[in-house]
Image (cartoon, rainbow over all chains, first blue to last red; front, side):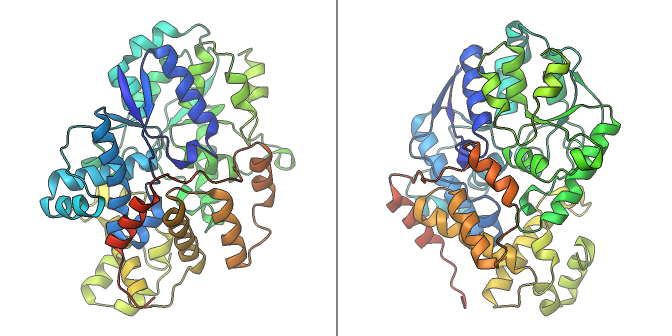
Amino acid sequence: MDFSYYPGCSLHSTACEYNDSVQETFKLLGAGLYELDDWNCCGASSAHSLNHALSLALPARNLAIAQKAGRDVVMPCAACFNRHKTADYAMRTDPEKRLYLEKAVDFTFSGSVQVRPLLDVIGNQIGLHQVKSLVKQPLHGLRVVGYYGCLLVRPPKITQFENPDNPTLMNRLLDTLGAEARPWSYATDCCGGGLTLTKSSLAAKLVNRLVDKAREAGAQALVTSCPLCQVNLEMRQSGGKTSGQEKMPVFYFTELMGLAFGLDQARSWWSKHLINPVPLLNSLTL
Amino acid sequence: MDYGPDRILRMIQLGEKDRLLQSSDIWLCASCETCGTRCPNEIDIARVMDGLRQLALIEGATIAEPSSIKFHKLFLFVVQNMGRMHEASVLLAHKLWTLNLLADMDSGAMMFIKGKVPLMPKPVKRRSEIKRIYDATRIKNSE
């Protein structure tokens, strides 16, 4: 089972542990990941905020490269996935936009490859039975909440993911790993990641609300599939020594897969976190 | 936020252009897509917000959140020249441009130490293709 792989800019920098855990777990899952040749940035929030045509054309170039490679393209970053899926949707449903983008990027759209979020590929194509067969060290005792954020699930017309109000795939995956995924009502509430640098006080308000609700649900950690959420949830979280309240670690779901699969490399991922998850894992002898 | 999404839509119906384009709402909207997903009239409100932002730029309106627009412009400038985001360049330039030098020094330094903010950019090889895209999509405005 082979896929094209679009890491996006974050996985080559602030989310390097996400990239590493994706690569390592895929080796065990027996699925090939082939990084797209010479991929470019999707334009993120900045492109769609300031220039609609650019926000479609930048991802369209990557889709042209993926089409040439001939495999479905897997996207670990929720924001990159959303931008590429939006461009893909535009070309599938709007002939005028398709012609415009074909001209801007200099290619002919065939629609032969699909844009897939990483969680969907692991959960629905590779399959949870395959994940389960690889679990060597079940994450018993680890209580977590699965956090999807916005861009993986909304707008549902474009993302075609799961029920946007109550997605369940991440919890099912976490249960498969032996962790206890706690029920909570904030799995798809916004963390304000897009505002974390320009309006940090607002982002902090949203982050701390999520962390409070996760704590209320009995969780010891949050689990995310988005590099922008992860950085924001760690960076804008208050607490720590002065407040008497410990900060809550934030994992990528692929890191917990790697840990449950018994990968030695997992140790190197924890040191990349801004909130050290080692005390929590040690307390559970994980 | 000054108004919230429902009042923004009503103001559009009423043609209150100046107040809309100068509002902080259009820059504080995080594009979380929640309101548009739930709207019974199926209005894509996040796209409306994008449209208002672009109109504010084209019309040269006074921007309520200059820090946001500076960030977006720097981001797109770096992508235009390298084809990819380079955090160190964008963050440093944004600090200088907004004169907000001390914000997030601790977490920024920690990420740097942990090797999460590479100093050297990894630009795309075929940069002429990126230039072609920027040329084809350029917005003609008063900027």
